[in-house]
Length: 168
Image (cartoon, rainbow, N blue to C red; front, top):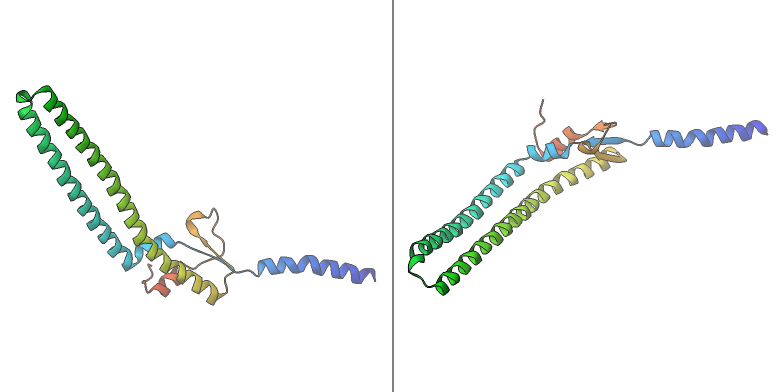
């Protein structure tokens, strides 16, 4: 009777350890994979074009402010005190509007980058999920956040699933 109880207790203690070890763990470097995707290069080019368009718009606006300021400086001596104050206030308002537009342009650029990268990351995440399910992985971790990379590196499998040639 005592042997049966001891055997049962030992079996109960050992069984969970085998169950934990039976979990299949993997890791992936999704950032590296994203940068290797053809979609990433086209997104990068689109973002660069968008950035250039925003910069041209800001440059044009700044040029108009500079022209206004130069015209003011040339006519300043001939103006009344009241006219100078109005022009200076107008110039300050234009400069503030420019700064606001520059801030908004930066926000738009960040939003555009996030939109473009989100679609690419979704493809990588879906490929990882499909591989995890198909290959029986319990957990897939992001390599860049790990202190120790145990388990299988499935980065090449994800690349293959996404149609990216694997680097050697």
